[in-house]
Length: 113
Image 1 (tube, rainbow, N blue to C red):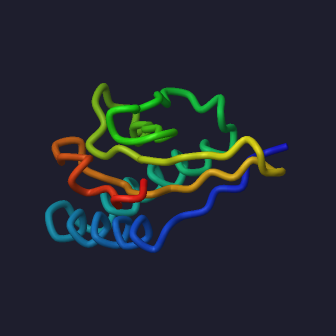
Image 2: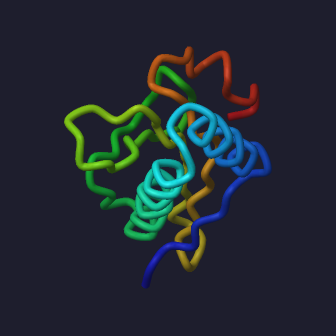
């Protein structure tokens, strides 16, 4: 059974900010393409815990994982930070943030994460 993927309000805000920044720098078409890539990555979280490219990130907090946004390029610009609970049925994935790869992840995660 596919996992239920839930986004925090902050993750939703991240999406809006990424879209706005991309439109300003690269135009609407590129923002749309990148938005599709982000949504595809989030959709892939439904396979938790077997998410391609995901890795456990204990340095960020207990049970925190990251996966790069799948763009088809060698290096992704954004990273999805998430946690998941195997004790719930269906498995529940909580997307905490979508951060640029150059950011200090610890600084941008909620303290309770």
